[in-house]
Image 1 (tube, rainbow, N blue to C red):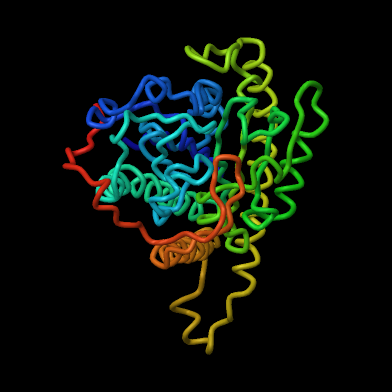
Image 2 (cartoon, rainbow, N blue to C red):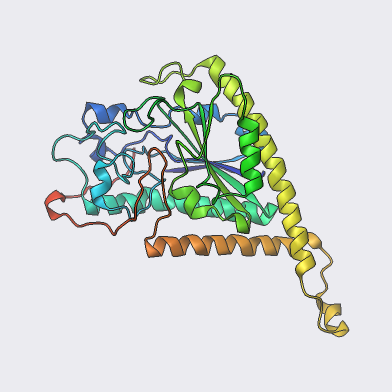
Amino acid sequence: MILVEEGQSPLILCLPHSGTDIPKPVSARFNATGRLQADLSWRLERLFSFSADLGLTVLRSSISRYVINADRNPATPLASATDPLAALCPVTTLDGKPIYQDGEEPGPTEIEQRVLLFHTPYHKALRQQIDRLMRKHGAVIFIDCQSMRSNIKGVTGKGLPELNIGSADGASCDADLRNLFVGTLSGLKGLELGVDTHTRGGFLINSFGRPERGVNGVTLLLAQRAYLRHESPPFEPDKAGMTRLQEVLTDCFSSLIDWAEETGRERKRNSVEARPGPAAPEEASGSSVTNDGDATVSDAGDDAAVVEADHRSSDESGAEPPQTEPDSGSGPPAKQEASPGNEKPITLLVAE
């Protein structure tokens, strides 16, 4: 299920890994490790409980990332299922522990079904929200919000900084926005910041981030020690840590909103100024623009449409932008591989 809380500011929070729902046909095949779901972005919806105060749009999936990872290319090959950094439908935890009972891993037909049921609707919902806010503001920021354990063997190296920003090395967002984001989170006591190191962003910001069109995508990856008492079940929130992080992020997001609103106004002004004048006086009398707002909304809508077309083109080609996020894969994607030996009867995957 896709959960959308619509706000009116130009900032969207995407939470692709905070869902805990697992369809019964899948959960029945998990082992004890899989049922723990240790790699979810635990309690992020609680951390961002201030979103309504800032008018933020929040887009969540209720489905666990162990079912499908909405931040991966749907054309990821089946062979990547055993690579925790690249898997679309993982069969191991991030530190390589199996999550399924022996022989119960999903095959290509089941994975295709999961894409149709859970992955595609999430991306469609994000396109709709970007479109809506582009028409309103002329510029949009969406933040792919994730969290993970601070120390994961083979993933986080010497440890994950409390705050991590990924921007595809600056390709998914405006340079001024990136500098603002980094500046507001730099130098905070007890909160180390990593920039395009532990995460550079996954499929979401690479697919939708079109800064030249006014659509800016950034990944925000949090170390769970920054707001949880324990990075293990039951993943209890740390009241003091969560309060402090909420204050930091509220200030940060407020600055980003101001930037996006000003950028959108500037884009609209430039669009109106760039419009060609009427060909002749008699034509002007019937088509002159008397409402600047109406005229500029059309321009913003054109940008949103181009962004959506670009995203569709990327999906159809099967090409995936580079991904070097800790839990994302790298290298060129391939078409889904058939594996008859791994196929089994499929029950409709509806989460309950």
